[in-house]
Amino acid sequence: MRSALLGSVLCAAVTSGFLLTATSAVAEDSKPSAALPNLANRLPSVHFYVDTGRLQAMANEAGVERENSSDLGTSRREKLILNTNADQDASIQYELSTGDEQLSANIVDGQQFTISRRPAKDAHGPVVEFHQPQEGPLTLSVIDRGVVHELKAPTIWHLLLTEPELCRQYLLPMLEMFRPEWHLAETTRLVETQMLRTAGEFRPENLRGWDALVADLASDRFAERQRAERELRAGGAAVIPFLQGLDHRRLDYEQWSRIQHIIEAADTDDEDRPESVASRLMADRHVWLVLLDRPEESTRRTAAGALSYLFGEPIQFDPAATEAVRHQQLEKLRKRVGPETPAETK
Image (cartoon, rainbow, N blue to C red; front, side, top):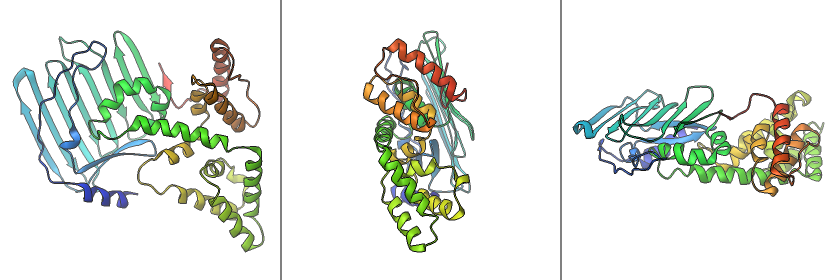
């Protein structure tokens, strides 16, 4: 993945210095107090992207060491440092202090992200912190008007699916400093749409057909195995999560090897795209629980069907019931799914 992505970065990169310019203040009580800087303009040689649900930062050159700062006294101080390692992973330190707020971003080896935004000493506004460690869950924390929101999730997509409004208001503006045209909210919407569309393909006749093709992968006849693999490859986006959900312990080596090749061939992109993200999340019961709580009855109905498929039996949930009844049913399902939810809100 890294080599193909590096080529695109090299083509797009342009020579630039670290020009630090002022940002305008926008005072609002319940929102961060200033428009955020466009760091993408100052870091054109660094490509920010999402891979398997985690943020990444890769440069087009190894061994870079650059630093620039400006100091206008108490009204504005700013510092930007870029270093790249031998693998061209970018480490970035950014600090901005104004009369209204303090903003900091720390990226280590292109994979660890810590971004925080808080009001200055005598100013008012929310405190926002985002952290992506080398491994483990991502955390978004927001303290606004005395109310604390803390969200933990294994990927950025889980965060955005679970709390879209919280992320839109507080998280996305910070991430878009690095890539203004990232469109993460729109990508998340497309992920949800693709998941619902794929779930609609999990009809009994399709499932029986795919099961038969998987069985044919173990045929004694080479031509039969080849035919079954071709038909599975041509089966569309819904086939991939079906294959990913199979228990490989019940398959022989030939079946599992061919299925792995089909799955790997379906996801060759360097960056996450809606189809690949939706495919990975199709077997995630916790994500379907989130969709089970959507305001649209049609979405709840599709999510109920997907969960029933994953459980292997109909779940006890009425998509058309009142909100109070659905809440009770959801709580029982959450206990059934288990405590290790992909996104925990406090």
